[in-house]
Amino acid sequence: MASAPTYTPIATQTLATGASSVTFSSIPQTYTDLVLVTQEYTTGTPTAYGISVQFNGDTGSNYSNTLVSGNGSSAASSRATNKIGAWIGYESYSANWTNIVTNIQNYSNSTTYKTLITRSSVASNYVAAGTSLWRNTGAISSITVLSTDFGSASTPFVAGSTFTLYGITAA
Image (cartoon, rainbow, N blue to C red; front, side, top):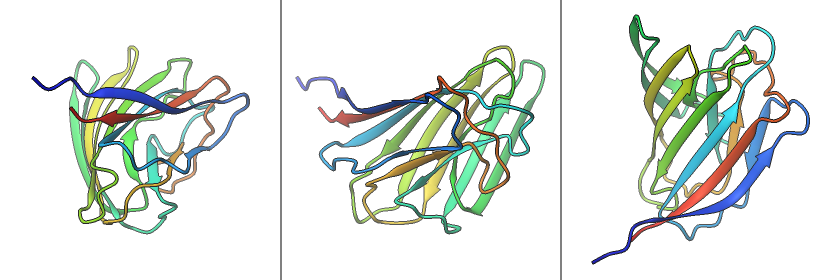
């Protein structure tokens, strides 16, 4: 009988001051998949309404995103192609923290495009799920989390926001 996959913390960053981005670099290529867990909120009234990630510094229009969301009384869905980042969750612009869990499959494979599955929620506001594609076959060695929705203006993550990257070892 195979053992269950193991989550290994690679790095955690907790912001001492506000920041518009957080980067994980030199990601080891020894795991099967990655999981990014964030707990954050942003200041002011956002103009972007989204948190996104970019891989290996790629700011080109190489990402596609599909998402569904709901707030208890209505639901919505959207699709976007040729974006400069992969959507992982909505910005929270009040004192409600956004919780996001993003699975990045097969990140070290150098022959296939990379896919993400993400789930996010803000207490008393919404839940959302999405999938994204990075159209690049390169192994992921760095991840930048942005408090922006595909290059729009952003509001910074507040101090105390936490970002943790885990590696998953397959059974």
